Length: 200
Image 1: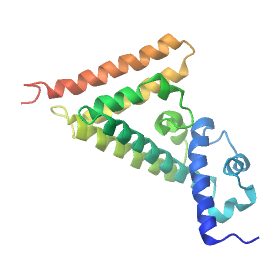
Image 2: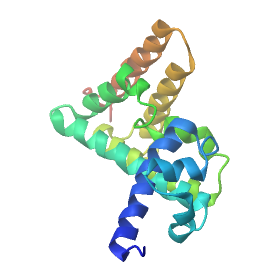
Image 3: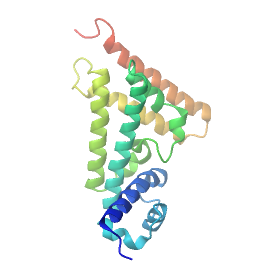
Image 4: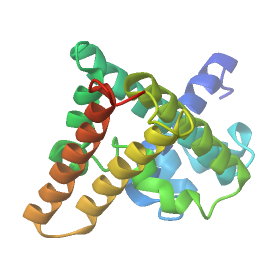
């Protein structure tokens, strides 16, 4: 039976959504097209009518995952408008986020995989990371003598690294300490800029 253009587009969007979650859980190379399509309730046969290649899907799914992550940051910030940065830190550096393998931060879940992918996947990650940095920069400003996003880069690196390390160990107490220590560090760094005399 012929699929309408609207249905074909809906199917395509469903595949991107599902792939954005399944790639985070399994990695780009840890799941095949058959299982990706099955996850979206479709057969593998229709894949090449919707995407040029698995790499094409990986790039689009990465973009979708990063957009989703940024919406979660916005939601956390909106829930605490007096302290948006603190709210995002509390959400991001939490044990709950540590456990979210399918819906958590794609930079944590797929960062090392993305480094081995082609230019399109890397472009998706770069665009998403730049948005992270822009949002962080609005909340924390720049430290003296650094580029406008230098401090945001240091904070994002600390946050991503802490979640990655917390997922890499079996020891739950060590996992919690990675998250807690990182939260204290980035909040202290952010507060230092806000202190009187921190900037001349």
